[in-house]
Length: 203
Image 1: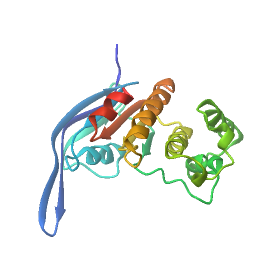
Image 2: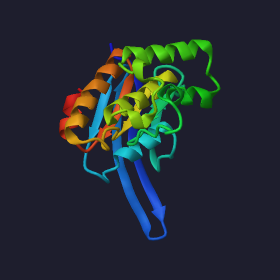
Image 3: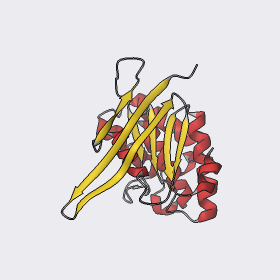
Image 4: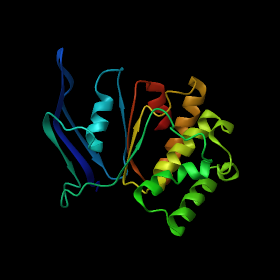
C-alpha cells in the first residue's frame, strides 16, 4: 500500500503588489506518495514554481494546507531543491561543487565525502571530479547539480524546470538520464516543466 509523504489540500496563493493582487495558484490539491515521481506540466506563469516554493517552505500559502508524513506526526521531511540553472561555482572543481550542500549543513564528514564520491563514480562523473564546470557539457553539469542535491540525502526532491537551459535534444536525453538516477536512488520527486515531451521522457 502506498504511503503518502505529502498532502496538499486546497492550496491557494495570492501575491500582493503595489499594482494589486495576483492569483498564482487556486484551490490546488495533490497527494504525493513515498517513492513517486510527480511531474506538473503547464505553461509559464500558471503557478507551478509557486507550488514548489510553497512545498519547500520558501513562501506561505494564502489558503489551504500542506501536511508532511500525514500518517505519522506531520514531521517535515528533508527537501532538496534543484533549480533551472545548475549554479555550479566556476572557481570550484566538480568535487568541491558537489560538496557544497554538505558544507552549508556542517555535515561534510569522511562518510558523507565517500558517499558523494561514490555517487559521482556511479553516475559517470568520477573521471571529471577534478575538472571545472566550464570543462563539462551542459548535460554533465546538470548531472553534477543533481548529485550535489542528492549528497545531502533529501527525502523529497523538487526540480524546477531543471533542463530548460539546455538545447532540445540534450534536454530530452538528460531528463531521461536524471529520471533514471532519481528512480535508482528511490527518491520521491516533484518536477515542474512546460514541456510535455520532457515530462514523458523523464517518466
